[in-house]
Image 1 (cartoon, rainbow, N blue to C red):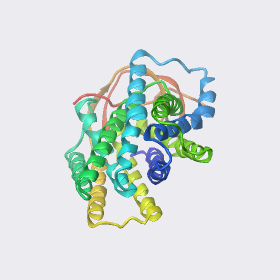
Image 2 (cartoon, helix red, strand yellow):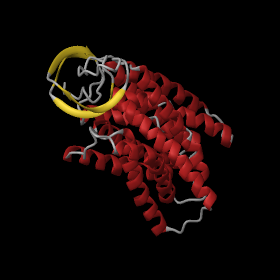
Image 3 (tube, rainbow, N blue to C red):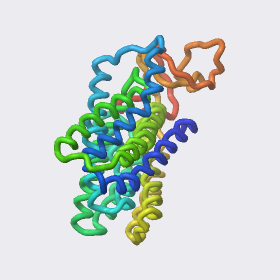
Length: 344
């Protein structure tokens, strides 16, 4: 697994994990639609400077029709629907339990990847997905009916984010900062508009700023880092690393809210750690074919897929520009990244 991509996904996980206890505090002052809108507007604002710089790139071009549909699907599922479902569930249960339930997201991403997006899971990775689902079920039963309803809401959010993850990893021709800007801007305006139509905004200006700051880092910077990692690892493996986010959120929640640690939470956390490890360590390699394609993304020239030349640039230097790939057939261990979306 590429070390740089792993570190990007881990940084994204830490930032996103911190959002759950922060959101629990903010939900006392905002409707879920209002808070979701503010969080994603903060995400969009954090990406404006970088997106403006990238707009001036000589190889920047509009997205084609297929990528516009992928972006629209990611915005609706991951930006508009998922955060509202998560915040509604967070109102019904503890921040620690909600954080751990978010580990359903890598399982949802993996299942959708196999069923819809032609990803391959080894038997070990399949066992990991099953373990994550079982651990989520353990958490959902611990506090009776309210916990079950909360778990269903969080699980639905995870399915939406799983679809978002798969679509975002496939977007070809848009940098992570621009993808995040579009997602945050559209989702923020839609959800905040719905929230203001349903109820007046009661949060103070200080709390509004706090929500925007949480959104800027825990959603904006985090999403951009995750997209960069997913384009190198594939959505399923990137989600496996990102699955450390719930444990960050659970640990912070236990410190902030002094919630008691239950036996079920400990057992579920242990099952989740083992299951996520199985998910991300499954190996896959075979002869496969690459068709000729032109696209733009972050890459380096010592990865076996980028043979175009930059005389002044060392092969190990990561950079971004529009480039062409010629037809290629070879065999090596690989992940379902931008270059390996073949069927099996």
